Image (cartoon, rainbow, N blue to C red; front, side, top):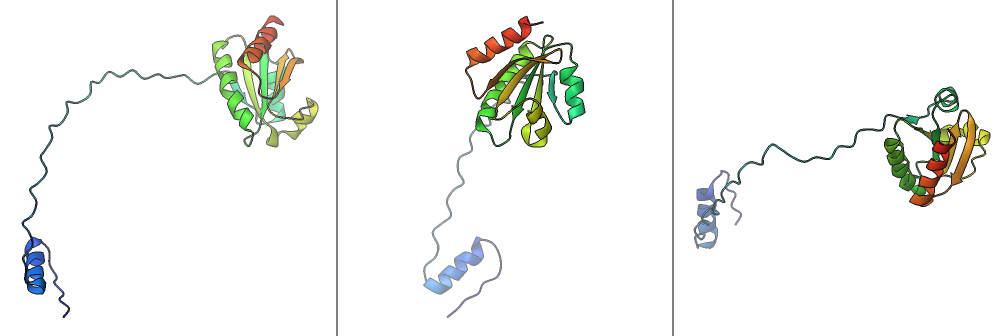
Length: 163
């Protein structure tokens, strides 16, 4: 025997179970105890905010490279990188931090290698990450690969001392 009961509420369900089994449903459970609501959080919060580095250039064209890197009065760290390159992703935050710390002393230029083959050839970049130090249109330093924090710091110090 198939019993179809349409409706809502526990009364219909109880009646249906009583009709089909001959036994009533157990009484419903009491509602769970309510917990007191915690007081609202204070409006003062300590949030660390790092301002974006203002002197980081994402190079979009060869002309932009010439204007922002080769003609710069300040030394420029040029980071040749690729999206698929894990060491590039590891090196990038360190370079950005150094650019932030030396904000009025140097610039950082990011060059995506897939989009700028001409610049790769011009600067003989054969592997990534490749980082060049350029000052007054001249390459004054270069390293390739993921190097230590100490080596990057030494590279930047040398670049800044060539001013």
